[in-house]
Amino acid sequence: MTSSEAENSPAQKSAIMRFAPLIAIFGLGIFIYSMGWHRYFSFDQLAANRKMITGLVADHFALSVLGFALAYAAVTSLSLPVGSFFTILGGFLFGPLVGGTATVVGATIGALLIFFIVRTSLGEALAARAGPFMEKLRDGFKENALSYMFFLRLAPVFPFWLVNIAPALLGVKTMTYFIGTFFGIMPATYTFSYIGAGLGSVIDAQGHAFDACMAKAVSNGVAPSCTVSFNPSDLVTPELLIAFAGLAIIALLPVILNKFRKS
Image 1 (cartoon, rainbow, N blue to C red):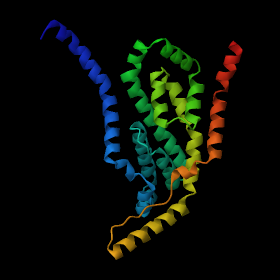
Image 2 (image 1 turned 30 degrees about the vertical axis):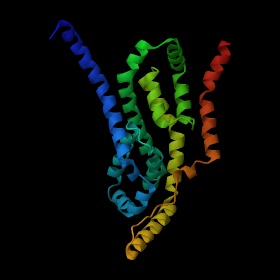
Image 3 (image 1 turned 90 degrees about the vertical axis):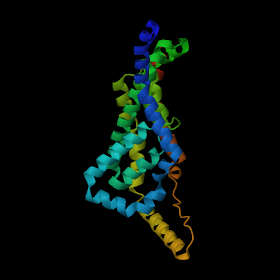
Image 4 (image 1 turned 60 degrees about the vertical axis):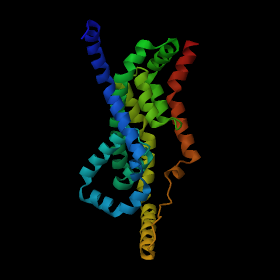
């Protein structure tokens, strides 16, 4: 081994160790998504297995809440597109208070995990190579980090996975990220958990229709093509979006007032 190879070896190993968690978590997320396994987290599956799921929750309530929170953390860290379903499911299974709280805790844990991984893998390298624009953006974000975090969490236009990653690249402190995430996701989380808690009769009706469809298909000897006609996107009304947008604007008021004071 040459002297240059010997010198580069520790740096190469350090780079591999730094990027390995990021590659692993995104690789696993892409693999799960490409295999279609995320489709098992759907209202079709809930309707088909609702008796077993609700029975399991009734028999092991505390363990079920813990398992749900950990599952939500995994879904969040892997950036799987099933967050809305899980949030509504939490309210349906555990009620709005317990389900909403388990969702907030699980989502925050998952968000912190991906935040640490991205910051360790990319944040330091990006800071070292940042140009003037990126430096200005980082400085502006640091100056009003908590207000911006609340805005990003409350505004209905930013994907949850993107808001998990961006602060790690912009030098946001861990405690600021935690507070902005934990409290910033509460309004939407408890709203959808409350909606989920009120969907018991709807999901039961859909489940009975699903069972009847399956039984008819079996009796006729044909392949079943039974689905649930409930779409969680139907719950996102314009009024709800306006309410969240209003909260997001309120979160930016300190930033706006600060701009006025400096002008």
